[in-house]
Length: 639
Image (cartoon, rainbow, N blue to C red; front, side, top):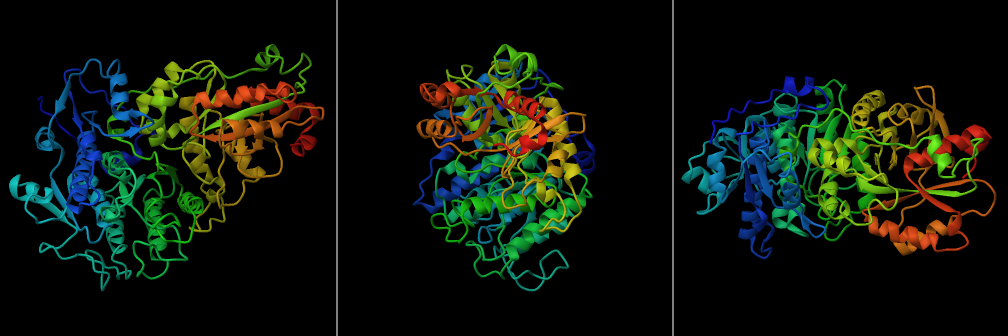
C-alpha cells in the first residue's frame, strides 16, 4: 500500500474553513478498502458476552473508519439494512460506476487486517468504563480529538480490550477508568481532572470533564456534535441491532466532534440515572451546548447529529418508564439546541442508522445544482392562471414529502423510493434538508442528476437543519442568549444557494413560540418563494429582502395512508367560488403510495375534478399571484 500521510485537522482550521469544506478526491492510484460488517447485525440478546462483542467491534470499526477517512475516502463498511435493501451495498454499487470507477477496491477480511492497513490513522487506545455508560461518548470525544480508538475496559481473556492491549500491544493513551478497573467517576468530591465539584451524578460528571478538557480547551470541534445512546444499550439491546447507531459516529469522529446523551427534561430524573439530583441531566445538556456556543462566540451554527433514543430513554415508551411522550421529548430537545444556535441532523428511530458518512464527505460536489422552477407563463399554459393573471377556480393541493431532516432517513429509504416506477408520473416536493449533503454528498448529487421534471426539492423542518426558528429569537428561555436568527439565516443561505432551494416545506415550531410575521420576513431571506408554517390561523405574504413577496400558509394535516389521505383531501375541497390552497404532510411515503392517493382523489367525479395536485413552488407562486389579485389584507383571512 502506498504510504498514507494523515494530517490532523486543528481546531483553528475547522472553524475558519468555508461552510462547505473541500471534498478531497483521492489519487487515482490510491485504493479504497471495504469491510463487510453485516455479521454484526446478528446478536444473541440473551447472551451478555455476545451483546458486548457486537457493541465493542462495531464501535471500534466506526471510530477507525472516522479516523481513516479524515483526509480521504479510504474505508467503506457494509452494514446498514432497510426498506428491503442493504443500503451500503446499494450505494457502493452505484457510486463505483462513476465517482469510484478509477480506484481499486480492496476487500478486507478481518478487523485485525483493518488495524494493520490503517495503523497510521490512530495513536493508541482510550479505555472507558461500562459501569459508567456515559464514558463511551466521552471516549468518542477523546478519540476524535487525539486519534485514539475507544475500547470498553474488560480484562477477561478473549475480550477485545485484552486482544488489543495484551496481544496487539496497542498503547493505552487515555483512561476514563482507573488502572485497577475501578470507576474513575464516582459522583463524589471533585470531578477528576477538573476543579469542579461533582454534580452528584456518576453519569453526568464525565461530561463536565469533557467540557473542561476538550470543548473549552479547543481540542474538540465545537461545531460538530453527536447525540447518540451511550453504553446503556449493553444492558438494554432492544429493537434492531443497528439502532444503537454506532456506525453513525464515524462522521463526528472524523471532524473531531463531541458526543453526549442526556435528558432534555428537568421535571423528572432520567430512567438511566434515577438517583441524580433533579435537573442534573438537563443542566449538563445546557452546559455542553453553552460551551460549544462560547467556543465560536455565538457566530457559527452547531450541527448535532442524532436523536433522542426514545425507545430506551427519557420517554413513556415501553420500559423507559418516564412520563413524557416521544414527540414532546423531541420538541424539547430541538428547542434546547435552537437556543444555542444549534440544529439537528435528526437520525431518529426506526430508520436512524447510517454508515460511511465520513467516506461520503469527500465527494466533489458542484458549486450549484439548479432546479427548473415554474414561471407565470408555465401556469398560464397549464390553465392555472388566465391571460389577465387571475388564478383558476380550483383547489390546488401540494404534498410535502418528508420527513427528510436526517441523512440516515434519506440513506435508508431512497434505494427503494427513488427507484419506485411511479416517480416522475406525479409532482413530488421532496423535503430534503440541504445540509444533509454534508454526510451524503454523492447521494444528493445523484438525486439531482436523475430527477424528472416532476421532482422538486424544498427543505423540511425549518431550513438547512431541524430547528425551531423562534428559539433563535429573544427571549430564549433555556439560554437567555441574544438573538441568533441572523446566524441561522446566513447558514441557510449558503446551503440553499448551492442546492437552489428557495422554499421551506415545513417550519416546525414544536413547543417554542409560533413564528410571527416579523420572523417569517427574516426567514424569507433564504426562502423567498414560500414558507409552510406549523401553526397560525392565516395565510398570506410577507415582504422579502429582494423586493418581492414571500407566500406563507399553515400545513393542513399529516396524511396517514393513501385511502384515508384521499378522504381528507376530498373532505377539504370547498364548493364556493374562488381558488383554494391546501398543503399536506406525508412521512416516508413511496411515490407509488402518493400516486395511489392522487388517483383516488381524481376518481371522485364531483370534488376530484376540482383538485389540481401541484409541486410546492407552483403552490407558492399561485399563492403570491392570488394575494396580489385580491389584496393582501383580504387574502390573509382566507383559508
